Length: 248
Image 1 (cartoon, one colour):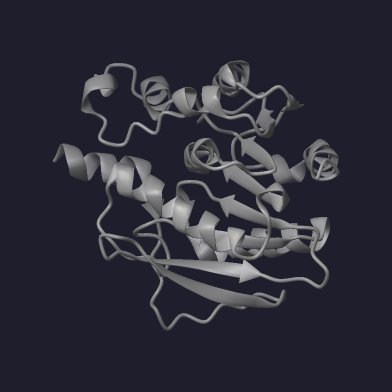
Image 2: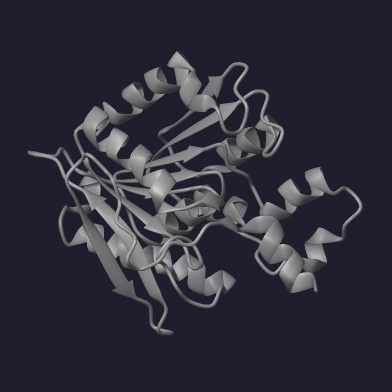
C-alpha cells in the first residue's frame, strides 16, 4: 500500500501506445534506448539546421511526451539548439519497472546519446521540478557545458513534508531524489529559476538548492508572482532563458 501510494503521489504519468503518432511541427526523430535491466526508454530528438549545441530536457512529474515534446520543439526553435526530451519509466512510450537508482541511471543513456552528437561543452542539461533531481544526478556524473534547474527542490522528502506535514517521509520514501547532495559536487555553470508563489515546491527550497551549489558560476532568477506550473506566462522567465542560453 505504501509503494502504491508513493507511485500515485510522485509519478503523475500518462502512458502512450507504442503506435502513438506525435503531431510536432519541428523535425524530430524518436529515440529508443535499452537499459541494463531490459527497460525500454523512449525519447524524442528535435533537430534544427546548424545547431549551436544540444539540450537534454528532463521534465516534471506529470504528463508525458505528447505534452512536453511541444515545449521541447519550442526550446529548439527559440534557442537554436537540438533538444532531446526523454520520458521516464512508466511515462509515454517508456517501459520498465520503476526503481530509484535505475531511473536516475536511465538519464545517462540519453546523456550519452547527446554526447555522440556534440562535445560535452555543447550540452545543456535542463531539469524542471522532478526533472531537477535527474539533472543534478547526471550533471554530477558527467560534465555538461551548462546546467539549468527550474522550480526544483533539495530533496523530495522536503516537498512531501511541506504537503503532508504529519507523514514520516524521511524513513518511508522509496524515491528520495536528493539533489542537495549532488548539487554540491557540480562544477558546471549553473542557473536556477523559481517562482515566488510556488506552492508545490516552495521558493525557499529553490534558494536552498542554489546556496548548496558547488559551481563557481551560478545565478538565481526569481520570477515574481510565478507559481509552479505557469512560469511560461511571464516575460521575465523568457528573459532569464535568453540570458542563460547566451552563455554557451
